[in-house]
Image 1 (cartoon, one colour):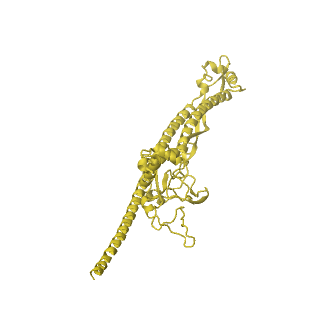
Image 2 (tube, rainbow, N blue to C red; image 1 turned 135 degrees about the vertical axis):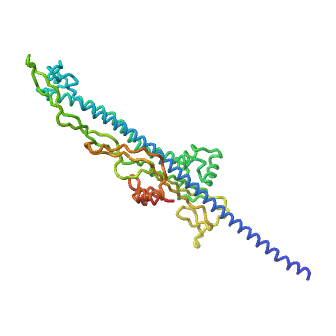
Length: 417
């Protein structure tokens, strides 16, 4: 009886040990799930902070280039005013071809015909031709210099976002900004002292953007949004404006004592005009901004590998894969993450054109931009819900084969997060 009692008493102890082991395993699983969830949250927060910072950096690049454009437009505006003033005088008078006491006025017609290869017969024809010749020289000189300055502006308009993208990419790929799980994965491949140059090289070679058709437990993806890389700062347009200068009349006259012909002093008459290009201004209502973000599929963690239990097809017994290409796990796997942020220059205004005559308004070079700010809820009133789309008015999404699978138009509310 005593032996039976001992055996009978030992059974609950074994059941208790098994129960404790199961409970302990459950606690560990719960702890692991909580730890994994907290790690995901921390990584998502870090990604969003990096995205916000990258958007601000890009908008600051835009700000710098917009202020440079303003400075160059100021130079063009000053040069245009100087040129317009330089067109005003009578060049025939300045050259001594008109006036009773001017020695060259008595041979003005013949001298000008020789210089210009013309056959003028009156002082007015000859001096008008000479004035026009000199003015064309001045306007050509202006146009040559203005074309060089405008080319610098267009380089900023078309190239600023490419520079901004380079800054954005460096921000996302800096080792200190990488998500923790990706940092650990790269340490295994590159060593513990890998640098930005190493990550950039790997990214440009596609090593961080593996095809999602691969079902590899070590696979991860880190893809930086680059749709804005080749967008212009704004749609540029050459401002048109007329040069205005006097139209002089040169009368034929004779010396009363010798009856020698000469050209009289010029008499200003109605104005003449010539077309010119001035500032490079903004066309349309596109709002300059920079949208960036990252799509991140974390590598499988050690905890996920411990709970490597997958959903299988009851008929074939094969593991079932989801859209990402990974097998569907019974326990939650690392979730794909996606962040977006947009920022824009603020505190300034864009160059605007005036009227063609330049008499009512000569436009403006704009006010200097003060910095950059994130686009968020405060912009609802400022932008009024207007389209905040790209220069080509769409953000295009493509599949792995490059086929367009959808387009999205952005408004201010789309950037809230």
